Length: 244
Image 1 (cartoon, rainbow, N blue to C red):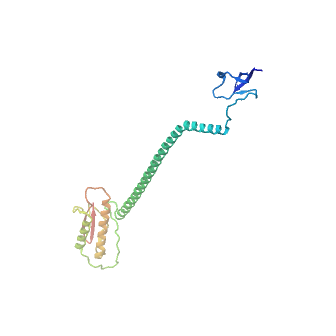
Image 2 (image 1 turned 30 degrees about the vertical axis):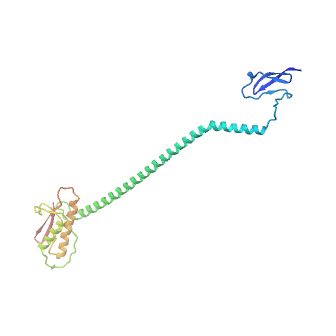
């Protein structure tokens, strides 16, 4: 038969082709672009003048596909690499900021520990000074006992009262203390007087120095606009170190 209809198909699209004298005629407007067309009659095949190198066709198809993919995705890959570099830079900046913050926090903790230690030392020193002052002073006229060693001798060696008082003033001057001659036994505080009848020269002098040290420590802890003041007076056989 020279002319006959044929069922043709391209993907999901079906249509009718015509066979005329062994040639297949198809309505190209019904065929989707780039699709393969199949015909229901195996007798009809497409022939070319030269044999087809199927391996070369496959290699060419692969190369073409790779080229299309490279052209299509190279821009996207470059953009992703750029974004990755930006993220890495931001991470480095953030890590540097965290390290700096950690260093600052460590320095602040060290400063706080040093300040705490200094405050503790100052508090201990103040407590020691206060304990020493309270141990030597009493309420009212502040009578308290200064340490001394009683000899038990009925006839202690004679002492030089003038030297005792003069050495006491020299010792107080070395501590930047000022003499207030208006201080008396009746208007000032004082420690237990030094009884020269039971004291040797060295023992009496040591007791006077002790009283001066107590006044310097006690008055130095009080805020005032003048150096600690004192006076040394004699009353019979006793020497008083006064403060006010």
